[in-house]
Image (cartoon, rainbow, N blue to C red; front, side, top):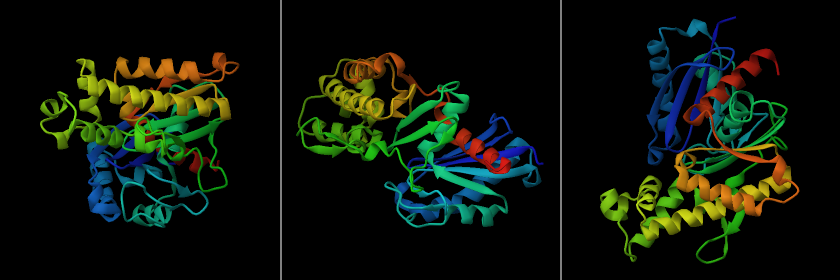
Length: 317
């Protein structure tokens, strides 16, 4: 059997591909930014060149690739391999992604939600290794989840599950119900900060270059310098996300909750506040048996999950 597998991440802000071996080790990777306004067709047009560059960089060719695994940023039909929807990039609804991949590259292909793929990778090779019940949450351009039991993705009734970003929490300003993704995703953190910066004193516009350029990274940087508006946005984010993750613990009682994505790459101000909120909200009898941990695989989590999907497909799992 050919020695290599390819793992692909199709996200709201980035496109990634990794060449790996049977053990899920990344041997080479390629990344590029996604322009959401260009739609799904532009992403599909970019993928063949990205994979060609991956193989060229690795000094490999297609005859050495056995299968492809894809983590996609949105819910999919697990049986049919078709996208149900992308909440961030147009032009994907109903698209037969698995069939397209198999025809495009002439190889077996497996597809799943990107957070589920990342969760599979963390459960087998990352922060959840060695435990049976792992919940993975990603907080990046959007918010997603993956529920992994005994090293396998639980796909619910076949249309996905663990859609954490679409659970409801109180809006920190109004108290009205809001989807978690609209409060705690990277885009939402930036949006809330931009709205506040338009009428409150803050160093954020100067730090970012303009009000329009304020993003989650700028919010964290400003918070670290003591900016009051940025500290408030960060506090609202960690309180809301900590509450949502405590609800996950109450419902599923995982041994490990792994948090990944760009927001999770923020530093100690974010993590210490999130751990405090989670600790005070988690169901007390469950608290000793649940750990909230950062992703070990970080930016590689979804592509490594794709490598695991490809290997499982070849094994017939």
